[in-house]
Length: 92
Image 1: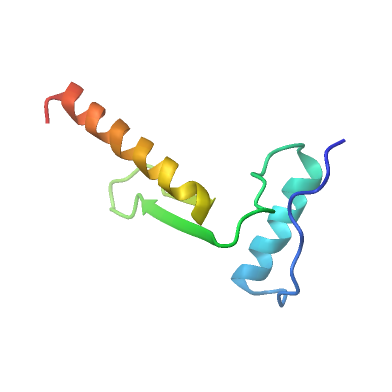
Image 2: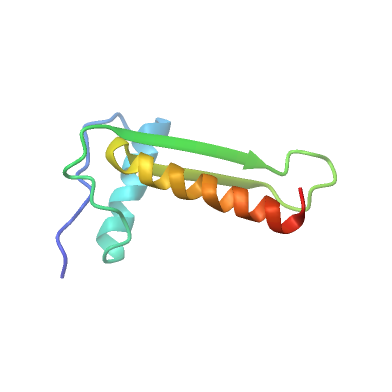
């Protein structure tokens, strides 16, 4: 069994961050290797995006990205290349 990657923090329950802390802790205990290893990270970044707010949208989608500042540069470089290639293929 792998060791726990999410160490809970003393955050007041009933708050958004308290819920996030609790759910990430549950995921870490339930599924092996579901969370990245942030133990060597000095800074964590979280980004979010939302869609489906329009009247005719069949779904509402919430997406979140949790990464370390140390890993961000590699992810951003890859993301930009994928976007560039996708738009070239579609002719935009």
